[in-house]
View 1 (cartoon, rainbow, N blue to C red):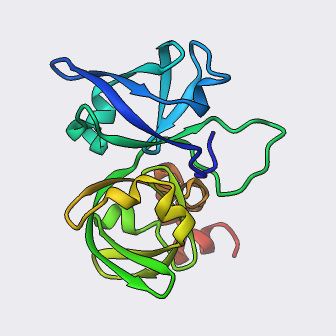
View 2: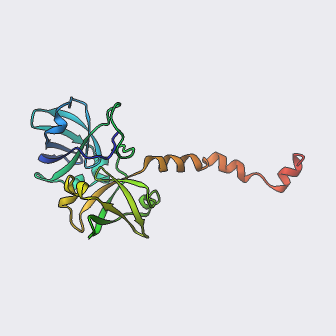
Length: 216
């Protein structure tokens, strides 16, 4: 589990593409201090498992499902990526609950300054927009952000200078692809409030005739 507070910007050292999968090596410094084999690291918001590491970089495997849903399919050597280690039990919870499981990709449609902030509009599909609410949380490339507006086919976030300067947003342009993870709480609430198919069938059998036959 992660918080969406980026610790470091890493640089892709090598990309080894398979037929449907990929192996990435990423140069880093801070996050390598307590990394072990099997450690979870969020790379642009994607939870990946460390398969090798040394003093200057770590390596992870990327499975086909991750490539289908995320922007990693377009990653190149030299690309900058947001990095965050898994949350420690005794750490401060500075962002929101981020699982590192990407729901979909979005496209940056507009970037503009507003005072000391940067407004970023992101287009995405209707399924993803269903879980996005004004003043709610969303992880964009692993960055915990607050939604300021929701439109018919997109949403907007306002990025403070610190976040803009210390994440990959500084290199982003209109048309770039970003990884999106919805608030997990919203998805669980929808699941709990949606009747199971069998429950719906049972409710559909209740009628005036049924009630009369059972003494109501």
